[in-house]
Image (tube, rainbow, N blue to C red; front, side, top):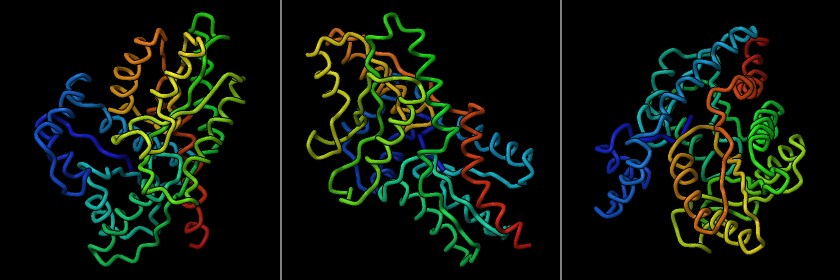
Length: 301
């Protein structure tokens, strides 16, 4: 399951309303989001990437002797998770495993995906056993896929020993994050593991893509971190967005356009690691997460 993204500029208004739970948006807000999509070509490749990830995961599981069908759904756009799950219910499989394409748990984000699945099951009064993968932020293949990208990007950077690596993830509104929510701690754990495997000691962490004022969302923000590093004389930053696994607006615009422009205005050259997308090592991580759950009903049979 992925977040979802409109497939054309004409869908941006409806998409924004869906993200906001039906709450209306001003024409200015819709136009602002449209302009962001225009800067990345009118749409993002999230749909195609998610489909390719699902196809690759199914092939991987079958090849490893764990036959399973892998379908994909989106939380906020077509194909909606609820619609996909409703169709799955008709086939009545022995078990349904939910994997959100976001490795770190927060009740607001991962809990929302889980709720979507349960709503889809409820449409058919289905009693299919359902297991939601809560988090997979330390999965070894995930760490290796990310650390390889950090090492590769640093090798392409002039004076890489002076480059600051910043790991990022999507910020969340403070009012929606409870004191015992593991989101931030899991993000830092992933960052530490990736830095260690890549042999990086000069690193930090920041949140990105907040849609509210500073102080009301988890921080520090990437812009705040860039300003801080600029004051310290840092001239090169490599961003590794550990909270994201695919190219979409938060990568193609928030990092490649907005953050890079902000860094340049502060005399800093900003680069980022390549997204995981359908990299075989990443697919291996997904398979490792799903496989132990899938084999249980097979053993029972």
